[in-house]
Amino acid sequence: MDIKDFVEKFAEQFEETDASMFTPETKFRELDEWSSLIALSIIAMVDEEYDVTLKGDEMRSANTIQDLFDIVKNK
Amino acid sequence: MSYLAINHVTIRGVAACVPQRIEENKDFSGLSIEEYEKYRQSTGIERRHCAIHDGSLCTSDLCYKSAERLLEELKWNKEEIGLLVFISHSADYKLPSTACILQERLGLPKDCMAFDSPLGCSGYVYGLAITSSLLSHGFIKKALLLVGNTQSVYASPKDKSTALLFGDAGSATALEYDEDTNETIHFQLYTDGSGKDALIVPDGGCRNPFNEKSLLYEKFEGGNERTRLHEILDGMSVFSFAISQVPRTFKLLAEHTDISPKNNDYLLLHQANKFICDKIRKKLKFPEEKVPCNIKNYGNTSAASLPLMMVTELSDNLKKQKLNILMTGFGVGLSIGTVRLTTDKIVCPPLLTI
Image 1 (cartoon, rainbow over the protein chains, first blue to last red):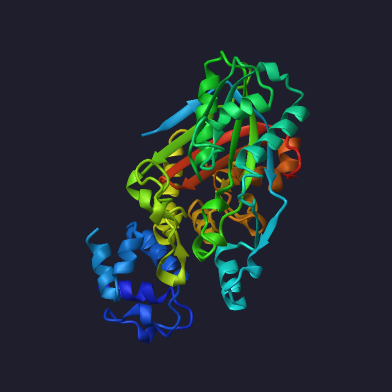
Image 2 (image 1 turned 90 degrees about the vertical axis):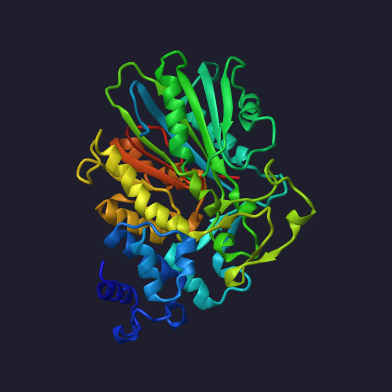
């Protein structure tokens, strides 16, 4: 699993936010476009791309993209 | 591994009933037009049929009306019905079983096996599995499966995650032992109790008995408020579970039967919300026209959503022709029931209301 790749796939779930806004340190909940629907899209992306089933608590515990990457990687 | 193959059982008919009373989501207080539109786009829901929960209209009433109409159209002799199964999370009483009450109310014989099974979104498929299994022995010839929920009772009026989602409905399905049929019903059943907290009404059972604190409103994220007698819905956990595990049950089912879009007329998905259904449909590679949706007008009706959809979306074809149908119900438990069955010109009265 590659963090660069993960950040890219993460960014693809957003429509309005520019891809340059996303780095491993991005606090994604602070982005204007962040919504519960995007949270679901990210869960779906993780399921499709990494075959990992994220629980609601795991999603809620992540603040940065790196945090989420680590959770997915360790499952 | 919980796969079941049932032979010599046929579905003869299905009927459904909803409360006449409609709640329009756009009229929900505290919801801006933008919020409504956003909600509508992701869940697909515009309105729901909901009972007023004062005891005047219960799940059993919706199932009773469905059953009476179905039996009338089938011209079944009630004396021949030896099995009644009632599946719901909204029973009339803590005890006795609602099935006993319905046996008497429907005028079924006393030589009748009748019991409840409390299940939610997976309940219709579980109900078909239980009922058809019991019939397959060949001793009981005719059975009624009554499935429904008036689950809007569990939605906190101050919690958008459930108050805009839950609708009420009841259904009746008639099944018969059939020596002559060559069709097999294939079931794949799944349970993951580790997800019990994803959908739960915490108080009022034996584990957390009703107490003075049960009625206090507590604040949760997103400005939602609910008491411990209301249902908690962890949308993210349910979503994650549904999009990963539901396709998995189909994969297991595919070891025994044909689940291809080519050889199945319909794929019926529990109407959880549009976003979940779209994801599952795409994963199973089914075209939109084979995957009907009625969530717009009824919301998420839990166990009743599959039979309700048969009535509102498939009625003409169910009556006219032989159909191969895939169905899946998934949710509270967490629990999944997935089935492939064949119907052959069954009775399907128009949607009933009370």
